[in-house]
Amino acid sequence: MTLEIIVFISAILFGIVWYWRESKNNKLYRVANKITHAKDLQMKSDNKKGFLHQQPFLMRLVWVTLLFAFGAAIVTFVTPINVFFIQYFASAIVGTLIGSYIASAVIFTRDSTSKENIEKVFDKGKEFVEDLVEGEEQPVEEVTEKTATQPEPEVPPKKSARDRLKDRGMIK
Image (cartoon, rainbow, N blue to C red):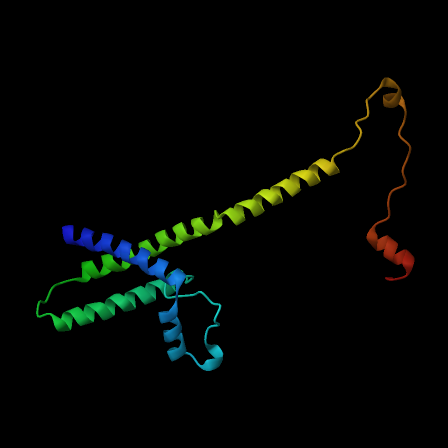
């Protein structure tokens, strides 16, 4: 059980480092993309997608599982020790996925709370308040007995948009 916890925590750290590294540079994913895709289907140079970075859950699961399956195959053939390592394999996959989501949350939080974004939000809020203040300046009428007893003048009902278009001859 202790070795499983060590593998799990190490996998979380590995997932954080892998995601952070791919958010900075995705050269390895670009190489894999060039090998597996035709020239027309290759990713653009401004695309930041990586094996974990900006991938949906299922693709992250596939890439992490392939990495650990490849690593497990190498360890099995290189070492003469035959160990039942399915639980370590599973905890490494789950830990790496959890680590990638932790890193994703940290990087997203850091990007969304940068000084420029906070200033943009502040400016938008300031403009919104100014619009509310400018639009609400209407004189308040005091209600007196004289105005309360006077009947309001009848306003003819406004025509609907359909009726106005009929009057212009645009519809029948």
